[in-house]
Length: 257
Image 1 (tube, rainbow, N blue to C red):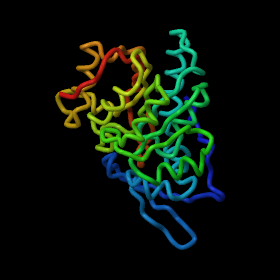
Image 2: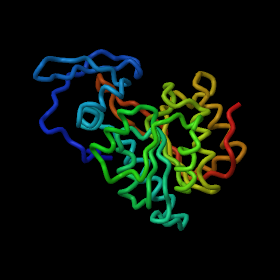
Image 3: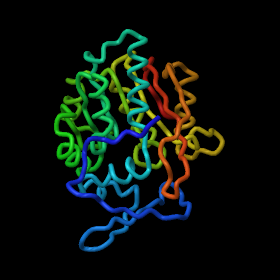
Image 4: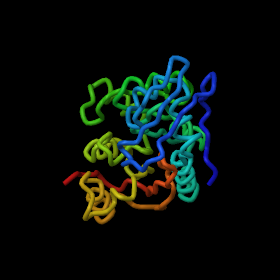
C-alpha cells in the first residue's frame, strides 16, 4: 500500500535527521533543524511535535511512511459496505484523535460526523489549526472521568463507531480507557483499532491489552470482521514496525479484568 500523505503541510520544508541506531519504539527520537538551531524531539513527545505545523506529518508520513489511518479507514468502509451500513448515518468517536489525521480519513470514507477525544490541549489546537472542518466536537479529557457536559457531548452525538489508531499499548491510552470509550458507542456499532503485534502476545504482554482483546473476542463482546498484520510504519532506523489492525462490531459491554 502506498503511503498516504495527510493534507496538513508546513509553510516551508522541515528538515529532520533520524538516528541510525535501532531504538525501542517508545524511545525513538529525531533532530529537527530550525533556523535557530537543531532540537532533539522524542517521537512520544506529542505536545511538542504538534506545536510545529506540519512536523508530525513530516516525521511520521514523509519519512517513516505511516499507513495506519488509511488502512483502518479502508477496512471500516469495507466492513460497513458489506454489512449494509450507510456511513453517512454514522458518527464516530475518535479516541486518541491527535491532530486529526484519522478524523480526516473518517470524513474521506463518508462518516456523518466525528467527535475527537485526546488528553493533551496541543492535540486539539493542532487539529483545529490544520483540519478545522473534520471534528464536530473535540474533547480534551480523560475518557474515564468525563464531566457532565463532556458526557452530554458524546451522548448527543450518538456515536455508532469507535476508532483508536496508533495510541494503544505504550501507556498513552490504558485498557480501561479504551473500554470506557467502547462502552459509549451504540450496540452493534462498528470499531476499528490497531496495536503493535507484540502487545497481542498473551505470555509477554504487560500492558493488559492482549488479555482484554482475547477475552472480548472469546466472550463475543468483539465480533471481528477483519484482522490484518501489516507494516504500520518504519522505525527511525528504517526497519518495518508491524501492527495488527482489527475491525469489527460491538456486541456487548467491555470489561477489564
